Image (tube, rainbow, N blue to C red; front, side):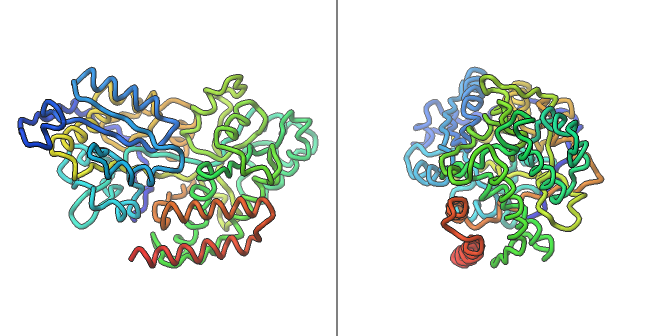
Amino acid sequence: MKKLKKFVTIAVSAMMATVALTGCSSTSKDEADSGDGKGQVYYLNFKPESEEQWKNIAADYEKETGVKVKVVTAASGTYEQTLKSEIAKKEAPTLFQINGPVGYQSWKDYTADLKDSKLYEMLLNKEMAVKDGDGVYGIPYVSEGYGIIVNQAIMNKYFALDGAKAKSLDEINNFAKLKEVTEDMQAKKDQLGIDGVFASTSLTPGEDWRWQTHLANLPVYNEYKDKGVSDLDKLEFTYSDNYKNIFDLYINNSTVKPTILGSKTVSDSMAEFALGKAAMVQNGNWGWGQIAEVEGNTVKSEDVKFMPIYTGVEGEEKQGICIGTENFFSINKKASEADQKASIAFVEWLFSSETGKKHVTDELGFIAPFNTFTKEESPQDPLAQEVLRYMSNTDLYNVDWNFVSFPSQQFKDDFGAALLEYCNGNMKWEDVKKLVVDQWASEKEAAK
């Protein structure tokens, strides 16, 4: 897997013209099944939190072009399972998502070659694409970032206290200082008017992706970096203790006790932050909508900041947030030719037309990796702006998204289940580590 850091520059290239739909006059049975020969689109959406936005996009596209776009959204944590079920149907998804090279191996029998598409031509950094030989089978469609989201107003209240362990966020640039500040804030939570420093760690099955995927990226990134690789058949989990450092800090300085985390969802966690019950929460720039839309939200947009996820590794004072993507569009090559063309045209319209780009920027909040977007067409919400700030900070290194190389969704689910058992006191940390190491190796071997 190529390093993802290369693509983070926001395009200032000239705008491309709106892509015209390709007509199709074939009257084959497959194309006749699509209706009028134009073809149609069936998009299987990955993120439940963006379901309404995708439906709005579909409605506008159908109104503008007359091409029907069906949007189905998989429930949280069930995308692979849903795709397996849907792809077997007569009216299967024509547009779906793979999560990098590992996902491609699972779905390569269904992914069309996009090397000659305008979508691939529009990509800022073509090394980002999922390739196999000369073919291009997955196109990244968003640059994203995640870290620790901070409520600056609560932090300022703490910094003003006598005996505060820091006087500004700039002083918190490693795990030791983050731990010192966090534990002092937790001890003074009543003075700060919060229930805990960190919002609850959501460990309900299907809601644990922030920990078994996003947080787990940090130790994997550092092990890959040490070994100069982009994947491993055998992960040693050498940074297991560093993972435990930050995970323990989250669960022991939280709004709730560790033993009830199995009932908590991402929405619960984001609501706690939005309502001012917590000062910090780990999540990505996509989480702004979850904060802003909470009824009774007390957090002002100007107070929402990102801080890197510090775990105690050497040199982390120069670490930024985690920036990359796990989102790659693929076209179902087993769909009719008309439906394949319609699906490619739909995505090209989304990322090149004025109407489409407005949806991308204003509704989906994507930082799009295409040369059709100007700097002014980047999302203006506070977390997207924070991602852009870290992207442009040459004094820091940002952490690549390496979890696209994780063995499988099952591996991640089992890791999440082990984390819950650890929180409940039913599993020792060394057993969590052993599960990760053993299952990683066995699944990578089985995939060969």
